[in-house]
Image (cartoon, rainbow, N blue to C red):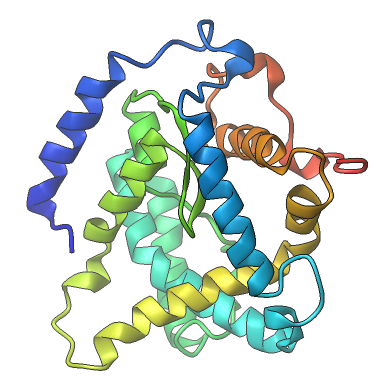
Length: 250
């Protein structure tokens, strides 16, 4: 597992490779995808896995009762909060870090280890962040678009962020015995399944109803991610609110 000692080399490699990344004006339509052929192969693999797990049809995780999925998603969110707080501190966003610390305290106790989102009901809503956003705040470019096996769409910056986030999670440094130390991994994986069900209609439209699911997924991801982290430079002219995406006819 990555540790804090591995962070400087990872960030240094990202800094060195940033010199080869074209600026927004050099990439057509704000999309830099030099490995499209390989990305499309990974995308096809991810679609097969998604379809095998019930995506694009009935059954699979969609058959799980909604209250169970909501509870799993809430617990996964609570486990992510310490990592989120660390990133917001690195971004010098002290107000957001303080609110998420309070959110963690409320949901971990009154919310029964995060099973219920009590904090959201008292004015402490979900507020996500990650090391990919931290790198953006620090001035690193997003790099090329890539699609990761099983994980899905990302950019080079976000891929590095995902690796570093493993090391930044304070809960990972508790020396828990087996099998308790694997519970967190299992809950996070279950949380991803719950998210897939929650956004099922939109994802099914992108993956199974569009003429070119790869291009549509890539474009939608980049628009959403840039909007999410407040990137006002890369492809700024094409920014759209992800909540206003019209997927009809894809």
